[in-house]
Amino acid sequence: MRNIKYIPEKFYDSYGSYREYVYPLIKKKHIRDFDKNFWRPSGFTSNMSVLEIGCGTGLFLKFIEKRGIRNFIGIESDKKVLEYMPDDLKDKIKIIDIFDYLGGLSNGEIFDRVVLIDVLEHFNPQEGVDLLELIKPVLSRNGVVIARVPNVSSPWGTKYQYGDLTHKAAYAPGSLKQVGLMAGFDCEVLPHRRGNPRKQLFESAIEKIINLVITDPPDIWTANMVGLFRAR
Image (cartoon, rainbow, N blue to C red; front, side):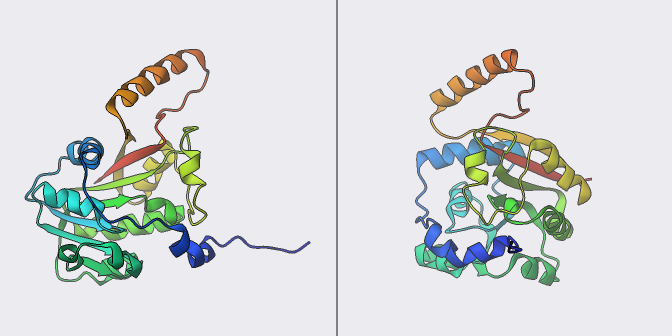
């Protein structure tokens, strides 16, 4: 039998065809989502400095710009995103490897918030620890790292986790906290609720009912979850 080694990085060869590139047009649903799951839980204010790692075409950056933040930078390794990005955003984006960028910061630049949306799962757990350790020195005193990842403890999270073969780590709430501890962070894990507010209320009610009748329910039911990492 052939000894075939699975190498997730090889699947990036087809990533450009697989990935959906969308022009970052901010709608009410995006504002509602980002406010509920990112802005309010982590205590954003308009005078903060923000670094987004893996910014894609810039949807979240357009959101924080709309909220009044002007001091921000986006990091992305896929140069194709520039084709789908507003011209006024391109000057804020650096096409560079994440580790190269963080390792090369030597000018004392500090960020109040570092955001990773659907990024951390693309690194294995040790790489995730290494990434968080590199972020730590560039965080302000009360800085927060915000990371959204698929929640594999939920039956709804598997389609997000296993729908992309470039994912190298699978996280439940406990393992996300564990990665944070290894890197010197305390991690608060919150559910990420998206979509119609009425559906969200209905889902929450159904989850409470299910919790009463099954032996081992997940701590968080939502398909995705958000980790708030604060330096210890």
